[in-house]
Amino acid sequence: MRIDIVTIFPAFFDVLGVSLLGKARSSGLLDVRVHDLRDWTHDRHRTVDDTPYGGGAGMVMKPEPWAEALDAIVADAARRPTIVFPSPAGEVFTQTTARELSGHQHLVFGCGRYEGIDERVFDYATMLGDVRLVSLGDYVLNGGEVAAMAMIEAIGRLVPGVVGNPDSLVEESHEDGLLEYPSYTKPALWRGREVPPVLLSGNHGAVDAWRRQQQLERTRDRRPDLLG
Ligand code: 6GU
Image (cartoon, rainbow, N blue to C red):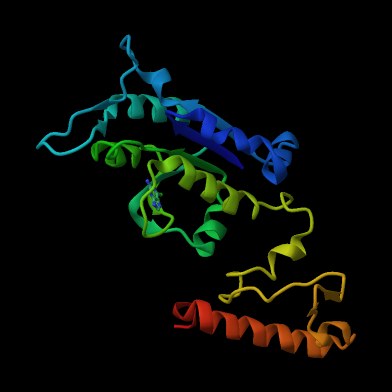
């Protein structure tokens, strides 16, 4: 999978060089390319923002650098990419979104800062790829970078081969619409706290039933919205 990221803060993405995704990059499973939006400005100050038409607080990202950046990225792309703009005004990103996007060959993340990107950029981008505005949830971050990082990690780990043992992907929170069951390791008695005895019983049927019950109870207590 190829992932292009356009940002005015490329350093936010330095962490893509470490841990599981870092390994996936070194091994060639993920081809991640981080681009500085300012490389497509032409003035001495490398300006990416301007005042909003109609007035109001804050600055808006100018359309021209965005169009040039996206043009350059798709120019050497094999096929139409999916272009994701992280935005608190977008559709909510879930495990379903991650699963879907993990099947795409080429993702482009356009990370906006300030009050947003000139709206015409989203329309222009539809000529180059399939455009999605995607939010992490109902709270506001300073820009799309941290949101893009979260999405890239959620998506990247679903790309076949990135997570070494694919079994670890199936018993996670949200994969079956429920929260994950609790996990324990040795020692069986620690600071006065015991591991639930059923887990030491060797009875696999009983363990499975207990875990399913735990998933249901936790989901009901913490995330009743998931049960519909
Ligand atoms: Cl995708 N962007 C920003 N700026 N804030 C957010 C978000 C995205 N998702 C939740 N809050």
